[in-house]
Amino acid sequence: MTEVVCPNDTNPLGILQGGRLVQWLDIASAVTAQTHAECVCVTVSIDSMKFMAPANIGDIITVKARVTRAFHTSMEIKVYAWARKVHEPLKYLISEAYFTFVALKNKGERAAVPF
Image (tube, rainbow, N blue to C red; front, side, top):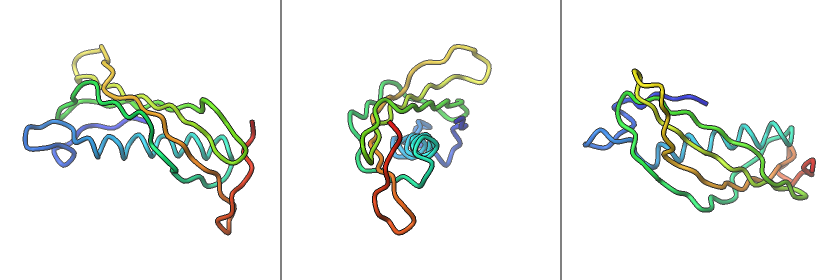
């Protein structure tokens, strides 16, 4: 997933707000979980959320997520976020976290997840 840091995403110093980054990480993790489970998945927890470096207005954010473990009805997703300046090719890690998702059937009951 790729995003651009816009003024609406930042604090008064022009730095990306942590809450906006968490939102982007959650979306990327949800897409990963739902693709793996082939059904709707919801966030159960966010573990080990680390903010390592700031991103600023105009930076390009790349988010990558992958399933690291699958259980009976839940999955652990590791997600990373990198930032880069528009005119610079080097990316730098700004955040990493573990999200846990549970798979749901249409009526909200837990659904089995492929191992």
